[in-house]
Image (tube, rainbow, N blue to C red; front, side, top):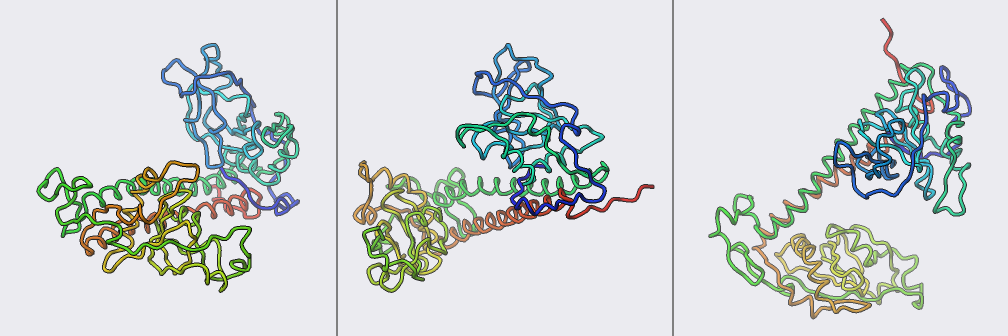
Length: 446
């Protein structure tokens, strides 16, 4: 169980909950160790003889990462007293400010891996504290502030603290191990749900990349299934873009959409009255990049009536294409928006599907960047975009392809929202349970 408390320090009451006690960390542990930091091979251990040392990236707020280690020189092998064990609590103690005092609980059973000099390992006393609880209370804002207030260093990019800072820190924990175990059980259940949801999101993202390629090269047959070029080569034809389904045509981007460049980019020399304080959404290149070929529903800037008079409004379902800076970024407007002059708006001719066009252009980003003149300020123009070749199915199939892909995007967004809610729930519940603000109910003893 790993987390970071983002609440204010004074949110933790000064009163010690009934049945809890405040004790220094050193009274809750069997031992603490720090290891060496020698020059190592930048690879994980590969044989049954080699030993490794942890990198600080093994200790992140997201959780324990056993794979983040490197191979020690032979003379450091066999340092069993420094070996990390399941149940240890690890804390980073040297590095940039935001990487110091990060805490994790070791959930796996690492073999032949030791701690480095940039971290401290705490081995909890089984009769005094549950590892998950010790890890959790060390992540509380009060303890984090205590540790960070005692670091040393000439710059925020490299600070550190002595072992005694953690060992002398007074933490509050339930006296009864049963209560601690119940807290750990609740938080472990949340952790399990988070891991499961993260795995679902990761799998769906992998599917997304492959599905985009398949949909735009094989398309969907009349039954809504991907065509199979290996089993049915007769369903495909040669084209200037390679093998494509027979039902598809090769068209230019100009055949599919009306291309127009946006107008007006606010700069310091412009009169700020043109855009400051307005309500009309004004999309910038950064907005397009952030959308990553998907729907854009909100712009980072806005125009007032004066700004609108020197800009251009594009309707909903316009496909925006950046032609400068990061060339080839795309987005679909979910609402009408004004565009900067470094973006082209492609308004598709009906009955073509704007979502399908966005999918195609997303895969052509590298090609567009390669076409751009290689200069300090690379850019492309309408003369480059208009003749761009596109393998285009009939509009009905375009919509079927877009429905398939965007339904997957919707599912990913739904799972990501669930994941965000689980993280929020964990932060709030962890804070309440680990400060005693909310008490767990224990089963009566027989």
